[in-house]
Length: 394
Image (cartoon, rainbow, N blue to C red):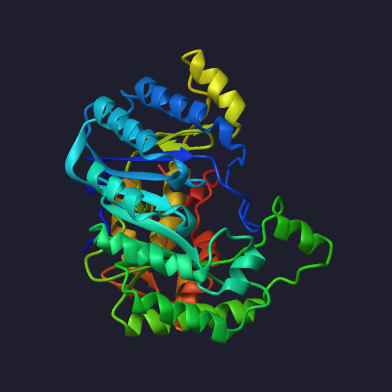
C-alpha cells in the first residue's frame, strides 16, 4: 500500500471528543472531567456543534468517524444514538464508513455492546492498558483484568469483528515478565488491532506530581527500549504488521481513521479540546467544558485558528510519515513542495543509513527497528526551516 496523501484529500474524517471519565487515571493529561452530571449538557452542545460545523467539508464524504475522550462508553445508549443521528443528519457519511468507539472495560455490558453494534458502530477500541490487577490499581484504572477479558469476549458475542486493544508499557515498578504476560494475554484474545503506548510522565498528572516530589521513578530509557523490542518481537511473530510506531494490526486491518491523520487527510474535531485540519488551517476548540457550552449556546464555535505555512506542512508530513511502514516519500515532497530533502540533509541521512537506523526503498526513507526507538529525533533533524532561503521551500 502506497503512502499517498492525495487519496486522503478526497475524503474526510470526523472525531468526537466526549470529555468525561469516572475517575482520573494517574498518567492521563487529555482534557476530561469527572463531573458526570454535566455530561448531558455537553453532549447536547456537541450535537449543536455538529450542526454549526456541517459545512466544514462542503460535500466531501466522511469515511471515518472516531468517538473518543475521555470515556465515551459512559454515554447511555440513547445519548449515543442521538449523537450518531446528528452525525448522519448533518454530514454525508460514506457507505461502509469505519465508525470507532472508545470503551473502558468497566462500562461494557452485553446490552451496551449489542446496542452500539445495532447503531452502526463497527469498530471498538478497548482501553485495557494491562491485564494485571496490581498494575491497573497503580495506574488508578477503574477495571480489573477479569473485566477486561470479559469485555473482549462479550464484544465478540455482540458481533464486533474489528477490535483494538490499548496496552501500555514502561510503567514504573513493572518488569519484562509483567509486560510479556500482558502481550501474551492480548494475542491469545486475537484482536484485529493492538496499540502499544510507552508511558510518558506528563506534568499535570498524578504521576507528574509524584515524579517532581521524588515519589515516582520514571522507567529508564534502556528498559523502555527493551520493552518496545519485546513488543515488536511478540506481535510480529504472531503475524501482526507494525505499521506505525505504536500500532500493530492483522493484515488488512489498519485503523482507517489513524491512517487518515497520518496521510494528511482533512478531519473535523467536535467537542471541548478537539482539533481539526482542513488542508490549509488547523483549529482547536477551547479545552474547558463550561466555556465550550456557553459559546455553543450562543452559536459560536469556540476555536482558535492557525494558518499553516509550507514549512509546517512539510514538517508535519515528515513527523507522521517517518513513523509509519510507508516511510517518508522524498519524491512526493519534491513534487508537492519543491523541496529536495535528500540534498538538504544528505550528511545526516547518510549517517542514519550507515548506523542502521534507516534504509531507502524507491526513494522513501524507512526506519529500522533500531531507528524506531529514536523516530522523533530523526524526524526533527530532517525538518526544514522556513526562515532559511537555502532550504528550497517555495
